Image (cartoon, rainbow, N blue to C red):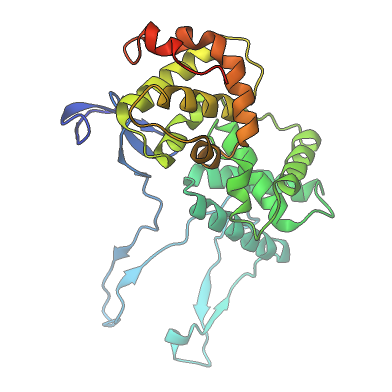
Length: 304
């Protein structure tokens, strides 16, 4: 628990919590994201002055990276044959290992993917650790590099129970197909014995409902219904269960959402959503909060 902050949705001061996996600061009452990715991940700049009237008094130190042989602690001295330091005329006192040079480039690619997906630094670092293990154990020889890097990020997300879908990773990995990333994930998971946390349907609620532009009351009803569904023996993929619940809940409100729109937001085929809906329909009165819809309204829901 953090402290109090003014929520624009609740229009009052409410308690807030910080989601350490996503870096978001969230209103405890309505779930509104008050501050996205509040973790400061930028390089820290400091200003120094010297007696040489250096035009640029700013200095910055590169963050130490424990994944590298020398942990990035490379010292440079100016080249005595050139006085123009602005052109980068420095001599390294100790060169990076060739393997470190490759690893730096690969970690940079992971960082680029993670940034485009809005993933915080702790996820990026864990993905880097997984990739280093992959390289050391020669786990993914013959696999596309982008698929391996995306797989490392996907596993890092799953370990933290952070909801990201394979389809999202295809958008940041040069047009790879989901099955290519999934095969790399399975290979890494089996050979390195990586334990991936199971993502529950509730993990996707805020993101998918946000894509659909749903109001706070409806989102809250969806979340409660998802929690209640976890007590049932519904053997369906969490995303398809959530999609079916969203469809069911929105049919009981003025803010109706089409099956097509839900299918796009949840990345689940319309036919799959219909099958999950049929499985959930007998339990509608148990999972839908009575403050959101009464028994008579629930009975009016279609069974297909």
